[in-house]
Length: 161
Image: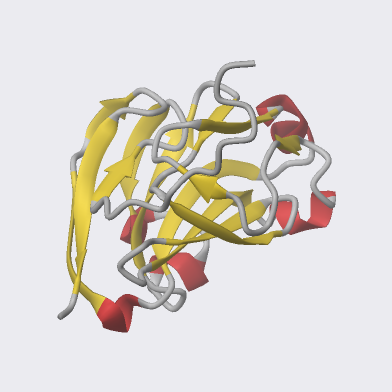
């Protein structure tokens, strides 16, 4: 019974954690022109190789749409975790998300799984995106490159002011 019923407290954490295991890709190089053109905001992408999904940042869940999760950090930055490209058409089927709106997350904690074979079978890309949707509030974003493991500390973002 240890820890049951304890409410998590939102902490100030500027860190970004790898939401999936795979290879980090520059946002400009993804196949979706909206994301590549940074119309949704600054961020990065990962080509996933494993189905585990973890929280990319510490914050409060503000939106869940089957293939996407919105998280608001304590400093006000709003993060979108978007699983795959054009996967909205799959109505959430390949994704098993274990989070609720209003839930407090710690960066790197497991929040669900993805069946990437279903995404590939539908002819869609597995590219997973992490976007700061209110990039006008972003002072800096630093993300490493290369191969990463889910939950690994991969960079940070600082909010203005």
